[in-house]
Image (cartoon, rainbow, N blue to C red; front, side):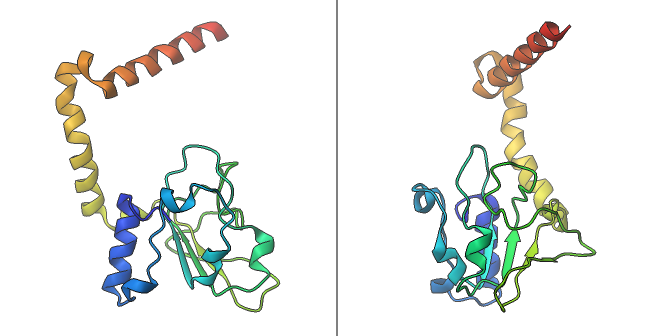
Amino acid sequence: MGALGRCGKGACDFARAVGIPEDLIIKWDMAETKAGGPFPRILQSEIFVNCIYLNQPIPPFFTPAMLDGDRNMSVIVDVSCDTTNPHNPIPVYSINTTFDKAVVEVVTKNALPLEVCSIDHLPTLLPRESSEAFSRDLLPTIIDLENREKSSVWGGAEALFQEKVQAMRSVR
C-alpha cells in the first residue's frame, strides 16, 4: 500500500531484491484504494506492507473480524505506524515494536499466525540513505528561502505560524 511513494518504492525494490516475482508484488496506491476499504484482497497476500501517508480520515484496509476468516496474510509490516491516529487504517494492533522486539502477535481466531512489525523509526536502519533523501528533498526549499515571499512552501509556513500565534493570543 502506498507503492508510488518513497517508502513504497523501496518496499517494492526490496521485494524484487529478495526474489519475489514481479507478478506477486501488488503495487496498490491511491488509485486502487480511492473507493475506500475494507479490502478483502489484501488478506490473500502473505505479506502486507503499509507505506501510506495518512493525512485524512480513511476507512480501514481490513478489520479485526476479517482476520478471523480465510486469509493467507501472516505478516504485516506497517512502515506508516499510525497506531495513535484515530483513523488508523490497520486497526488490528495498538503498539509500536522495537529493533529488539521487532514483531508482535495479533490474536485472531484463525489458526494461521499473524505478526506485525511496526517500528516507528524504521528509516534509521538506513541512516545514510534516509539522510541523503531528506537532504535532497529539503535543499530546494532551503535555497528558496532567499525568495520566500514568492515561495508557496515558505508562504504556507508563515501563514500557519501567524495562525498559531493568533490562537495563542486568544487563549490568554
